[in-house]
Image (cartoon, rainbow, N blue to C red; front, side, top):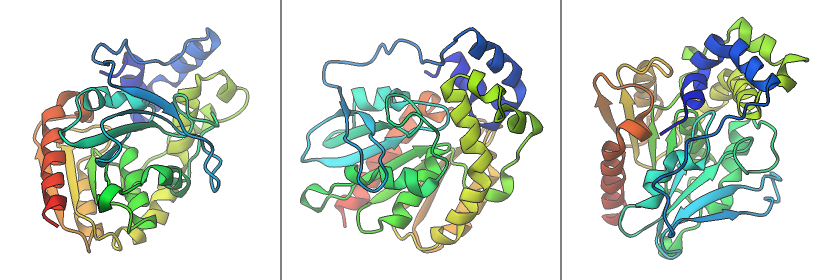
Length: 287
């Protein structure tokens, strides 16, 4: 489960509602961390990749499963870390190599600064887009991880098998910037914020422009796409779903509507996400 601070500060709602509390936390050296991971077991490996030649980003990741199996790559939102997907890595679907990354600016990935560019974040995933025996990977992205996996599919169309977008924020028209966010990005306030909060704010400030860049590229994606979204998501509105249905014009799209559910689906709807992964695996196995 996400920590109290990760939940409260997640996406734009928390930044606007708690920016002064976050400033106070920074003054007292408070660090945003998740709770102890009770489900991690001996089979999970932690690994740091070397800096990628074209991005300079050295990803940190958690993984479990055989190297010669189809990869399922999990991408967290903002803020967050790879262990947001601990349940899926500790007990991966049968016959897959499950990998969760710390995105640039979070966890142990280096450099530590924010990387607002969706294209750069997508390119940072390139070393993991291997295809043992032609088994192209499935990418699963939550919240801001959603547009990142979509950007990866647009940039690397021959390397990705399918997308699962969980509570994804893809419609640029639904993004809003608040005054408190602009203030929080200025000196002397920004250096006082915990790193995860500062980097989250910088990602969100740039997100509308980044989604405008991504929007015309979504129609070029032909891989199957599954969209999972809660109707009571107050952080990333359900209206994103209709945008995605229209924007993914060349892809077979499946929508899983979760009536009455909120934004935190990796923790409260694990079974739904697992089912979507299993169905995507079956589609890809059938060719």
